[in-house]
Length: 66
Image 1 (cartoon, rainbow, N blue to C red):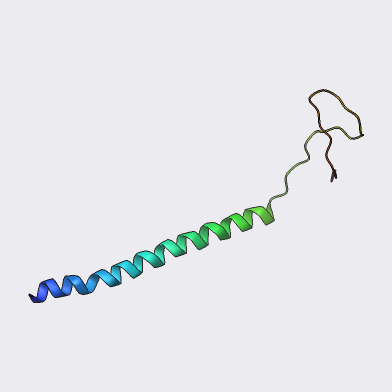
Image 2 (image 1 turned 180 degrees about the horizontal axis):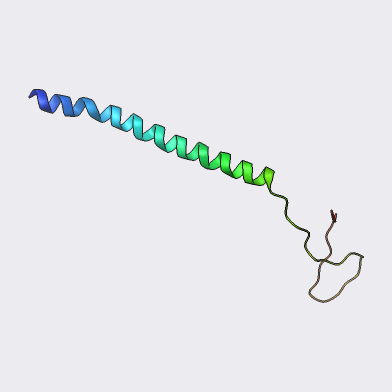
């Protein structure tokens, strides 16, 4: 084997580990973003029936917060 071939083979494990690290970093960052958005956002109230009753096509929230 030549020296240049051995040098190329020695770089592959390093490149593979760097690729694994980048992929893991992207996954962790995406999950952190999802957790941030879930905690920071406060959705507005949705129009729904306030009292029990049955009207066609309308539903009542089980535990309305607003």
